[in-house]
Length: 356
Figure 1 (cartoon, rainbow, N blue to C red):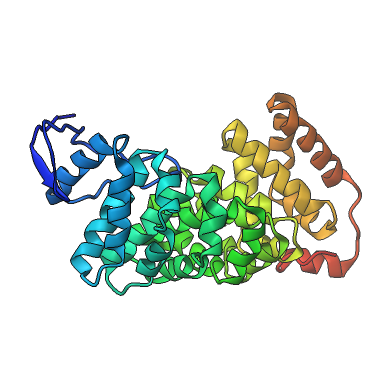
Figure 2 (figure 1 turned 45 degrees about the horizontal axis):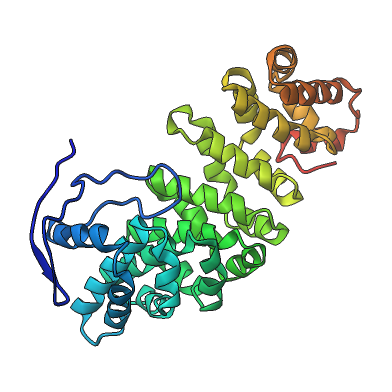
C-alpha cells in the first residue's frame, strides 16, 4: 500500500515544507539501478528532501554532498553517500551533474572502506551513476574496476549484487570487458551465480553473459567452474533461471574448454530435456547449444543420440520457431549420419566427451 508523509524538514541550512514521497519502495526487475529499497526509516526525511529538490537548486546540494564524501567524519560520509546514492537513483538528469561535480573518485574511495555501509553506498552510488552512458568511461578511467571487484568478493549481499550490476554497466564499453576480466571479476561472479540469492544469480548471469563475449573471459569463466552452476540452473525449472543460464552457456560454448566442461557436468541430458519440455525460447537456445556441441564431434553426437534427442528434435522441427526448426533439422541430419566405428571415439563418448 502506498502512503504519503507530510513534513517540514531543515537540511544544510535550508527548510523544506510539505514534502511528500511515496513511502513504499519496490525492487527493480532488471539490473538497472539501486533496487534494494533498504533505506532505514530514519532517512525518510532525507528521501523526501531529495525527491522534492532534485530538479531545483540541485547544483548547490550536490557540491555540498561531494564535499561531505571527503569529510573526516564517517557519519558525514555515510550521510553524503546515502543522499548521492538516492539522488542519482531517482533523478536521471542529476547523474551527469554528480559526476561533473567530482563525486566519482571519492565514491570509489568509499568502496574500499572496511565499513560495510560505506562500501555498499559507494558501490550503489557508482552503479546509479553508471546508468548514464556519458559516465561509464569516466568511472572506469577513475579506477573503479578493481574496487568493484573487491566489493564483489567481500561485500555484503547488496554490495555484491550492485557491484555485479555496476561491472555489467561498465562492460557495455567494449574495451572495459578485458580490463574487468583481468581484474579478477569472473571467479566471484561465478561464486555469486552459485551461492547468491535469486537476485544475485540474475545479476551474476547477466554480467557473465556480457563479459563472455570476449574469448579470454570465456576461458576464465570455464576455469572458474561456471558450467556446474549453469547446468544445475538449467536443470531446475523452478529456479526461473533456465533462460538466463542457457544464454550464458550458449555464449561460452564456442570454446573447446566450455564444450568439454558442459559434457562433464552432465549438460547433455539437461539440454535434451529442455528441448522436450521447455518453453519455445528455451527449446531454441537448447537446440542451438546442442548443434554447436555436435558440429565437430562424433563423440558428442553419439552421446546426444543416446539421450533420446531425435524424437523431441523431430517435434521441434515441426512446431518450433522458424530458427529452432532450422537448427533442429540440421542437428537431426548430423545425428543420423553414419557414426565412426572407431572404438576410441566410442570410449571418449562414454567417458567425458572430449572431441574427436
